[in-house]
Length: 391
Image 1 (tube, rainbow, N blue to C red):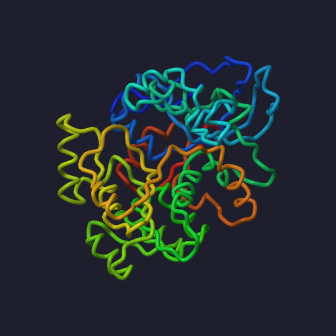
Image 2 (cartoon, rainbow, N blue to C red):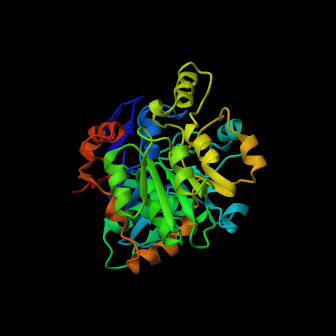
Image 3 (tube, helix red, strand yellow):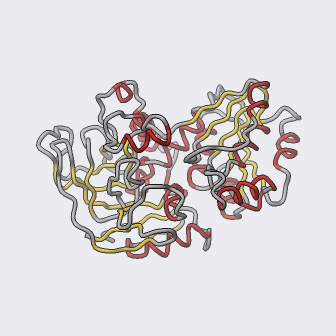
């Protein structure tokens, strides 16, 4: 079959790889009808995620049609249309039973590797390094889904692939970002990063009762899309973000601040972001947390900082004195997608949101390598790429 594979920094190829096979009775094989390139995939493209190996199949935003089912899987049948969460979860362990599916204790066969870096291992993920399981991803014609009686969610009749594909990751992640803000109605929420996750965080904050959303980016197309959703937009290359948020909130700060950027912010955004870049380049640091620092400073006393941007290692010079003395709450996670899928599918069916609004580019799988470069360079107004392996 054809698949997009990783061969090193900035080197993604579309090539032939072996077809997936059932390996466990709870598995399923799906024919991929739609998949997407995620902002998190760019961390792999940029070579900053360890334990990738040449030839690894990429992709963790995937949906399709079930073509084969393991003997112990009673949930799915051949022909079912399903969306596949990027988190692989057994459904039976301590964390899965509590709804914390992204903390699954059983799904990462390489948990010991993750423990060396993080103390404990999260769930296995599709297409996202051997430290997180070495599972082949879904930017491919077919994909094996472990624990397929827990993860894949059946798509109701009448909904298109583009309406439901993003339930695999970015819609639940953006929704979780807003959910973490504990909104009661009438709040001001600031969102750093107007990429796809940030766009869903903006939409979700309004769905959950925010009165105003302040969206922060510098890419014109992203700011325009955020504005279409009703956000007040700020360009961090043209304005002092702290001062502007102070002005907009009568000096109090935002009720909640969402970091939807993570470890790779714009290097030229500030002096500290330049220093972060130098530290990473000289192996004196692992991450560049400029956005998190700014979000802390811009949050009001006893407000919430919600973190859904990806960080991988040790963060330097975080203003914990500010956070502690002003009573901030931090909430963060890899998204337990299975927890959010039912309620978000219901919102889609009720036409409260059409997630396809973020799509700017549609393409065949063979175009994937060039689209990775376009997405990374933010060229041609590229915000979200959807690929259809079979046209």
